[in-house]
Image (cartoon, rainbow, N blue to C red; front, side, top):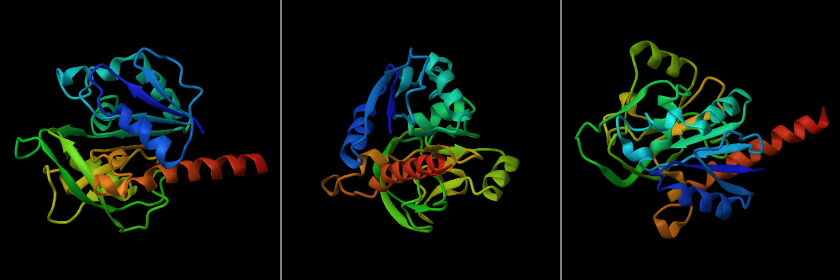
Length: 231
């Protein structure tokens, strides 16, 4: 299975994502610069955190126009796995690959600490190794993580089981609507989340609860390709 880690000017979690793939599942992984226009080699594309283009205009607003994001949109249509983390989540919403928007934290402060998430949907390719309702400890580091969408979109997310993660009840760190920490598209192959699973793969870092994100992706891919081989 081949992984791509996108790199924009201002990305700063690309190395973390690269190392997470190496350390958790040992699969081939490449850094892919924002000028690339062909992602056909890759089965999973990671859009990392950081400050793409300095977060000028709005977080993720400039990155959406890059060549590589056009290729990401094509990959998403083909059913490939796309995971956007923190700024990557913001990029995916700006590119309209996920609904809604990320606003300034309700306290207007950058929040950087561990956060407890509840796994709301364990049927995606990114969460299948978790139990439904499982509480996991994943760090956050953001100033614009306040998820917002209109009422109709929220109802759709709820009815389609597109809310993948919520912050633990009573511990919402940024004011996100409905305590949302991560969502998927309708097909379930594109997921965006504000917390950083790539920073939670070793107990020495405070938690290893992020490892199952990566093992989930690999097992989903293998199952899909084993089924295709049988056919």
